Image (cartoon, rainbow, N blue to C red; front, side, top):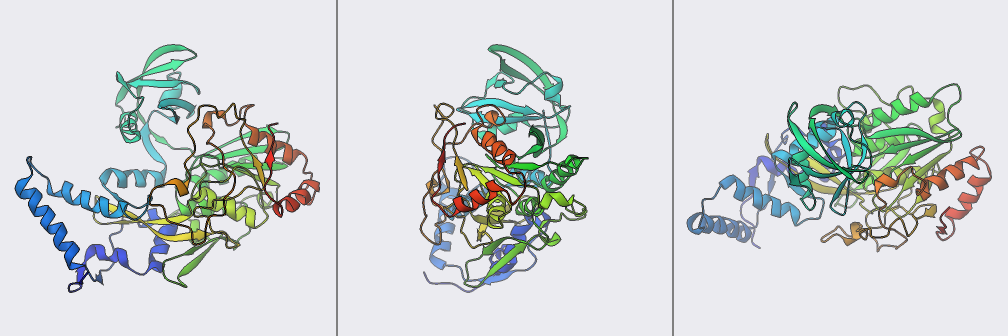
Amino acid sequence: MKPIKSVNTGAAALLAPIAAALVLAFAPVAHAQQAPAAAASVAVPEAELQKLIATYALIKQNYVGETDDKKLFDGALAGMLASLDPHSEYMNEDAMREMARAATGQYVGIGVEIDLDHERMQVVSTVEGSPAARAGVQAGDVIVAIDDVAVGGLPAGEVARRMLGEPGTSSTFALQSHGKLKSVRIERAALQDSTVRTRIVGQGVAWIRVAQFSGPTGGELAAALRQLDGKAPPRGLILDLRNDPGGLVAAGVAVAGAFLPEGATVFSAHGRESGVEATVTVEQRYYRQRDEADVLAGLPAWTRSVPLVVLVNGASASAAELVAGALQDHGRATVVGTRTFGKGSIQSIIPLDEDSGIKFTVARYFTPKGREIQEHGVQPDLVVAPKAAVLAGEEPLRREADLAGHLAASVPEEGGEHAAMEPARLFGTRDDQALRAAVKLLHGQEQPGGLWTALLRKLRGKPRQQVAAM
């Protein structure tokens, strides 16, 4: 294609050096409200640009209905970003608003965590004191309809639109509870999305579940750890990252930093150009939110030495893999479960104007020891899969390597075990094989240098093993 004269546009700053884009990726929300700082010159292929203009003109002149310019060009931008990989996208006003919500953890809703299971909306948990909890909604209830509209089969975006809304608005929810149908009217309220939950699951063992990585996650984890700091601190911790889709890179660094010493490497990010890379460590600049205190300051000393097990599965992705890989490489934790999803790429979110922006992949990330996550995922030290009966009827799990147009790994995928995704409602129940294995592991590990640690270090040098149901 013959390039035409270089052009300057406000959006051309998106093509600034990758190193600058990496900085945005580490704390994308902090920059989400900032317009591109400077324009850059790029060579635009004349033939392709003329094709776009010709297509636009033909639509405007001949399409049977009325057309909207903004909708047409939004579609063109969306197609351009979608052609890159499954994680790059054009972000309209709704998407930008959702991104900002993830940064703050604030939303307007009824206060439930939902598990979409075969077109069934099953309640995993309710937020304490939320409208849903006050209305009697319980874990295990299935939301059948909202305002007389059946939700089975609706796209996820449409379900979210019906669940969320403005404070003070209300909807009627049809629920299937313990085999009976009931109807409750629930008024929406402004809520804080809690991403960290803690409970004691064995003698001296605390189970900390991180559902996703949002802006408040690091602070929530630090608060949970401080709450555990009593007269007898835990003898073991289980960090549960199963079914965690990832989220903000900065939040992942904060979580890893709660268990690693200051200055420890969390991951390295490699851009397109050879030699353009950055190493991210446990330092405030990589995890501290703007205008907020250091969430890791003053943590009890035991958080960086207490025996630690990390639970993962095939739905642990992105920032969850980043954390698991870092703790594994530093020998800080034993990773238990099944192979992770394999999303080892970092996306930068950059606004185009007040109402739109783009998200595109700027780098791959590697664990402290240089292991690539993209396509490969994180292999657990101890493979513990759910019982076959638990997964009966579950859809086969799709990993990063199964997504159309995914970014290929720098080196061929090594392969490894992975199982179907366990429904989140089973976590913490007697069918939770990985959690039971983690508790047993920690009960047998009297101190960090104990027998279990020695055995697991040997295990890491051998082929992965399948652990029978316990």
